[in-house]
Image 1 (cartoon, rainbow, N blue to C red):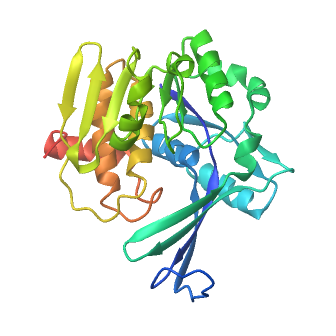
Image 2 (image 1 turned 90 degrees about the vertical axis):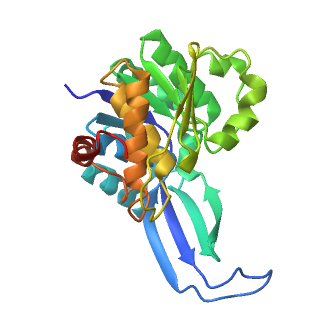
Image 3 (image 1 turned 60 degrees about the vertical axis):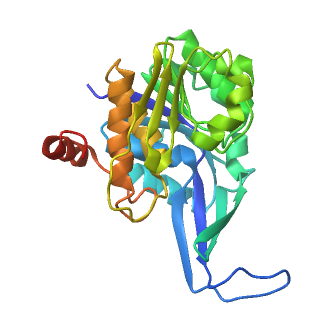
Length: 294
């Protein structure tokens, strides 16, 4: 039976411009490449989990606009269940305006309909959360909603994973509701002041340096898998979606971490965030041929 992963989070459209140089204040320049791609950390992680064999339910909001339809069609095509995604009239679909130049990027996020994901909105989906094996959260919707989702999950014995990105400081009351916290190394440093009494599991992702797994039993360093890197976009979202999918079918945190490391490594061998995310058969082939690592 497929594990049931409920992703509660953002659904965005990425509007990407590639330019030859950064414009100065008041300057108008010509964009030589424009892309419109599905995005949002919630949607990205939902796609990753669905491709890797989980039954994925998405809880979120989009606008009643063409961008919303574009985002929903993409998720539908990936096999994500959308019965509980609302199209709201008072907001436009969330957008990320991304400019790429000189090997770097600048991003402006307009949350839009993601702000309609309020605790009151979430309350009507209590039964969806209760029927889940794992809920997967990020921080592109309001924190009070995330806290309410974690409270509901705790009430029904559902596993709770929080990817604290994009970074916002969280308090002890919220942390007590989280079973697994998955910061990257920069987010981990920022969170240290509130982690002193945290009794859950920490999984710190460190890119090419691997993953640090911190439990009450100690610290385990997991090396990264060496691959030919084409694009690191979406590697973190792939890791989180893969971890939730695997943890939904096993009680072994270490097994779920190893699975997620393989998935994120394979994702960076392809171009694009969602487009680079691997499917379950690719993971199986890798494990068969390489024993999971090389």
